Length: 470
Image (cartoon, rainbow, N blue to C red; front, side, top):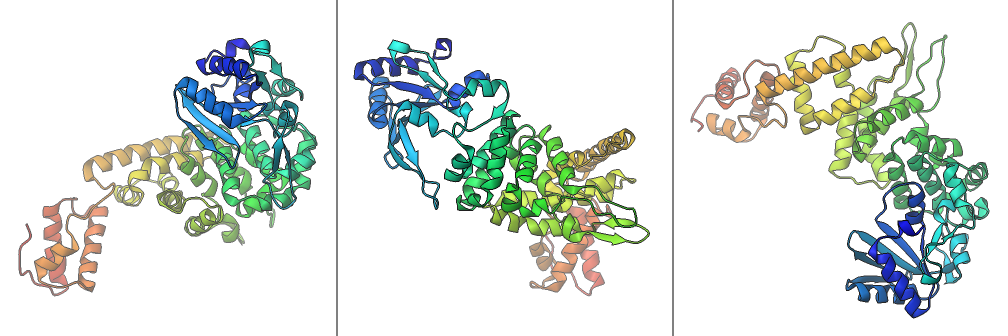
């Protein structure tokens, strides 16, 4: 293991461990990532003794600042390109109503037993007497080789003590493409109700990490199969299932959503665009109708879905700012490019799409491409070819008409000055007519044409020009 301990911070820790006569170990994620061949800049050090005092000694030796968190018994420093956190070895016990443990000083064995999973319980000794020796009491290396998520101790107790570990198990499975041990799955199912003692912020943090993994459907399938999703995100569960009437069914919108999510993850790391993929069909259950002679419809699911987004974000304690509005906009507009790709694309339809999507037009097109989940290769090829035509049309119209993030060439103030009127209904009428004329291509998107159009439309409703505009 010594070849993995080349960073200079390890030699400083080792020499101080000898000088202060304490045992120190690298533990947890940094050690796990060595065996996963993943780079890591976060190093956790556990000390048999006072972790804060040891951290302060290391910081003094390195001539860097140390941040102390006495409530947690931890200290952290940054040196070169790594962040190092120190803690004393500890033993933990839990009360049923809280996931915050009662902490006592402990041995390395105690500290490894309190770890959530075997792959996170690996430790490497840093004292010069046994420098670089791997300590793996729960066969974490074997679990890495078998791609298995397993708890060091009884999983029922592990998940009952800290129910957030149920989310973490699924998150690691999703991030690493590992399988969760059967006993651990059974333990999650038996501890479902315990997730309610975890704050929504912590749950959503794990959920976002699942969504940011390379193939989030792995995590969502575990969330669904264990029953956790039913508690933390019931609106998504409502997408599940197929109803059949008179021999006519519809696609399973839950698994379609997972496919769209996986598809979009191939083209973007943007968390909120991935959330748009999750929520694009969220209103299909409440808008589902069966029409005899036609089949299943979901009319208006994009409008209702957009109205559902703020409530879902609030429920999940996600930000209610421009990120939420971005997701809401994409849910609202997600059908528009698909409709355009199925018919002859008019300039006016493209202008309207650009007007409404603005700077988010590229994100919208990515979502719509991801939304094509048919297994019919002919249809896939047809959709993709049509999407390319729509993209080219968007580019052409945008270069000519500059509609994206459109600002009216004639303002309400211009209209009031031109006709000598105050704020009122007439100003709104004329502004709407200008916008529609530009979007329909009746007049070019420039000030001179818009002024002439304004005068014409004002006169039609009985207004007279009393001044000029600059």
